[in-house]
Amino acid sequence: MIRHAHHHHHRHLPAHHAHHHGHLLSGPDTGQELEPLVDVEHQPAPNDVLHPYPLRQLEVAEGRARGTCALPHVGLFMAVISSLFFSLCSLIVKILGDINPMELAVFRFLGILLPTLPLLVRRADPPFPKGRRLMLILRGVVGAVSLMLQFYAFRHMPLADASVIIFSVPVFVAVFARVFLGEPCGLFHGVVIVLTIAGVVLIARPPLLFGSLSEAYTTENWWGVAAAVGATVIAANVYVILRVLKGLHFSVIMTNFAIVALCLTPVVSWISGHFCVPRCGYERYLILAIGVFSFGGQILLTKALQLEQAGPVSIARTADVVFAFIWQAVFFKELPDLLSLMGALLVISCVFLTGLRKWLLSLPHTSAVRRRLRCLTC
Image 1 (cartoon, rainbow, N blue to C red):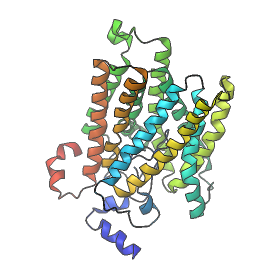
Image 2: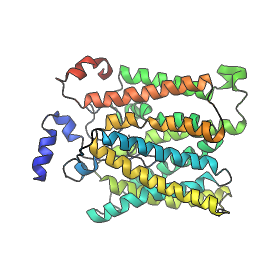
Image 3: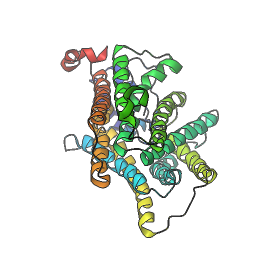
Image 4: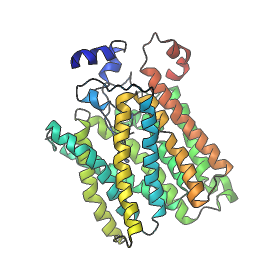
């Protein structure tokens, strides 16, 4: 019956689309599962884990039928709530200004490990497969560095601005896929990359281009911008590593990622000389909340990807940026200026179009919607 249900679900999908639902990918830096948002039709195989993290449905990855639900679009609702949880993690990092962000990252990694370790044990897959160990360690190191840079950026620049820059990761995947994997990078990718860079520039406002408009940024803010951009570049490169690991189940990749990160992060905190024990119950509760929200966000995002296609889910996750603007205004009384809003609009639009393109490429070639929006598939 399970085989029959699986076949029935894919009978209207093109062959390449059915093939690409075999692996679940997870975010290189955030531990969030994301679709790599590059051309499915041109990929010889899916590049597993984060946002490129392509995202594969958990149940399909395990050879089971895709989840169903009586409520329409409940998967998209779960994706939005997942974004809410991850944005709350960012908010807590910003609030806990006296605690090293590297130390706080430990609890984010625990939130990644807890959902995936039981699945790994249940599947009985080798946790450290021969011939892949070095790449798994490298993936863990690179992902950990990316997340630590994200947390540093949240701490040292406006929360919404940092979130927008970091959220642009999927747009830049095509660049590194072209450089390292030789994958096509067409007109669409070129346009959205240029527009995304323009959006990031409007947010960062380098003095060379904006002169006195950049004076509000302190040296600390500029380090935050550098961290956000660095996190974005590193996160995009994680996809190259994940392509090498594409044959492994996502639970193996994510478990190794979390273990390596949990080993690396305390060392970085100790070397930086800022490792400390939270002083009061208030701080300790917030730190625990990072792990809880990370765990909840991970579970909800995984479930969302069981119920909905990755393209629409990636679009729903733009709510992450909206929440960041809300938290910035409510908790820090910082209203974004016109340039920041324009930059955010550009970046979110590009991510939206990239997710829409991903969904269009999953439709049959005879689809009326795909034909109507064929300009996005060029």
